[in-house]
Length: 119
Length: 113
Image (tube, rainbow over all chains, first blue to last red; front, side):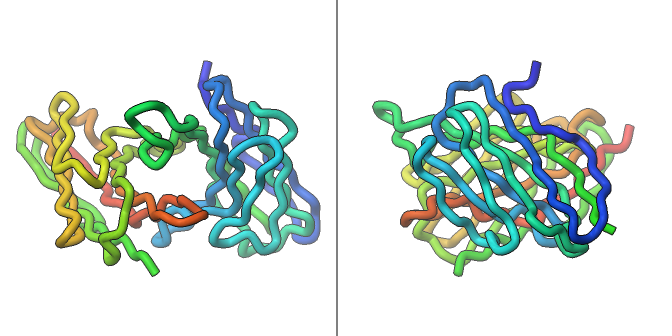
């Protein structure tokens, strides 16, 4: 089983619809992230959460919201989807600071992505 | 604003060759640099992470180097195999509150049998 699971894997929907993408992890990590990937633009950070009560906006948070329901679950919502939100969305996790490593140097672990198309 | 660039965008080489992928970044104030592999329809797999205080990291046939002062990193793949075909992305971790990863656009690598 995957350590970071995203659902759904693929979704096609219409403009104006509300959509929720879900992410769950079994790695026991405190930190979770949502990115989107667009051709030619790499990955960009949408939101991140360092624990259940700590949620922060990333580089491109407009039009998105998130919910950290539990340590293991982090959901991304598009309240009213628009075509330019068509992209590949990734959830990632990373561990908390550990002695000798520091949270700056904890690698991020990614899910397999959700391909979202908005017509 | 940090910008990460990967050149070339695509690379095709015969099996068995040694090859180098390049990554450059504009702001040397980074905490680490991470190389990922992305297979079609899949997420990102972390290959190597180099802390800002380190010069290189090795894992099997992969060796990543970091020259923070010049804003460059290379990923060296020895004795390439068809299974190495994938897109390779580098990302730098910035400091400050966001602690975000800034990604390059990736290099699509094809190893021909």
